[in-house]
Length: 153
Image 1: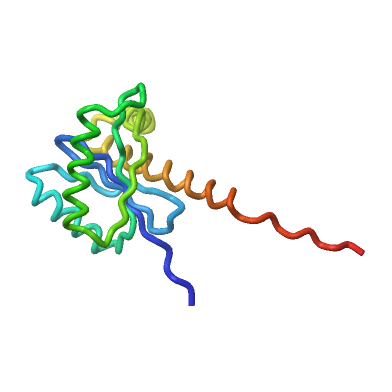
Image 2: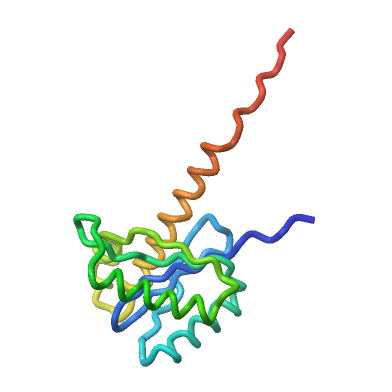
């Protein structure tokens, strides 16, 4: 009997809202919800409910680097928030994914719907999570041994 695939959560952490995405398969990310931040405790409780409901094992958090790739104030805020999450959700594995351009990509995907409150955040979270899943799949594929050649004699 094989183990069920890991379930992944993607987060686009902002000062006002957190976009949340989900991958049940570890292959495809989908936008899930947007959480409005009304206090650290409430926000973490909301995320904890999602983690429990979907049996999340890995949380991929967008790291909002500056365009130059350097860390700025928003990176520090995001890392501090993740430290709070780690204390409350120690069973999760947390990883960071560069999120530069994810919101711009989300706006482009959404077009006219980009003005819907929270839509950009959810889609940006899905983009961040999908980037991570795609990179992880490429790394697994490059580490797999080549299939043995069959003897044709």
